[in-house]
Amino acid sequence: MNDDDSNDVAGTDRVPCWRGRAIVLAPLDADDAELMQTWRSDPVAAHEIGFWPRSLSSLRERMERDRDDHERDDFTVLLPDGTPIGHIALVGQDMVDGTASVHLMMDPRYRGQSHGTDALDALADLAFGELPMQRIEAITHTGNAAALTVLAKAGFVHEGVRRSACLHRGRRLDVAVLSLLRAEWEVLDRPRSWDL
Image (cartoon, rainbow, N blue to C red; front, side, top):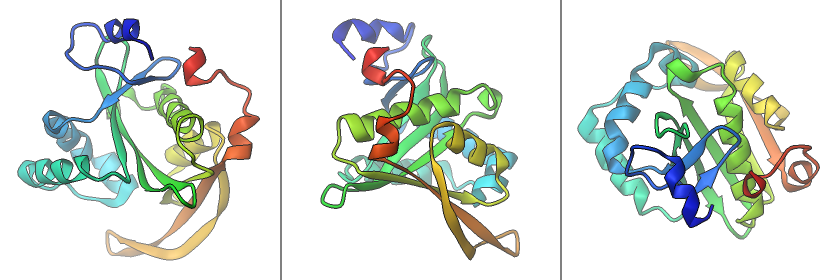
């Protein structure tokens, strides 16, 4: 994005650093902890992603630690008017092997509106267009139909299942493993972030 694009996030002091078709990404800040706490407290997210809310102070501390982690990039997903609608991260970046994992969490009020796919597309453009990634991976419960749909729309390929890989609500659950390879990203028929 160029300097003129910072005006796209009206009414906020956030500086967008990357864009999708209908969203922009801005660096996640410790001040976003309350938003993250709200999103993580959503019962659907807690069930589908398999975590429970922690204290706000604990979340702030974790976000401060993550800020100094050079193997991850965390972003707040924003509408062009500056409304925060989600969090997306590229984590576990291995610059030698060219691999990383993606995490995505959307505000419940904005699910099902293609913003998650848009954010994943933008993050893939960053990973393959600006970083030396060769593969990005995502994992989710095999029963998380919404996440599996969003990942498929963004071009991720289902690789397999890690059977009985996590414990959630007293039950062992299978985890789906999906990935997007550089060669697959290169042939996707959609505009890239820098063309928008």
